[in-house]
Image (cartoon, helix red, strand yellow):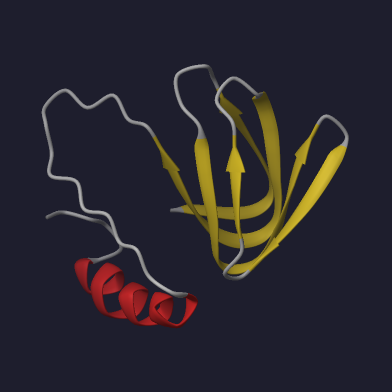
Amino acid sequence: MLNVEGDMPLHADGRSFHALLCVSGSCGITFGGERLTLDRGASAFVPAGIGEYVLSGSAQVLLSARGHAKKKKKTILFICTAGDYNDIYNNTFMKRGGTYGW
């Protein structure tokens, strides 16, 4: 979870995309002079290899990217409707201290 306060430069190298989900607050994504605003519940996809981009504002943003784990871990995928999101987040994610540790 990223706690964005002000400007936060990030880098999407050629190894992985970045999937961003704004969990609370609001922030902007700036790349190459273009700006996209993410409000709570909105998401954005940053392609691999795009290079540096900046998140700015005041928000909590979940960043998902392809990792380079040293050992295999169990992967869990949730597919839900927008109405299910709050229930999954509040009852599953937060009860585990904000981390996935299955």
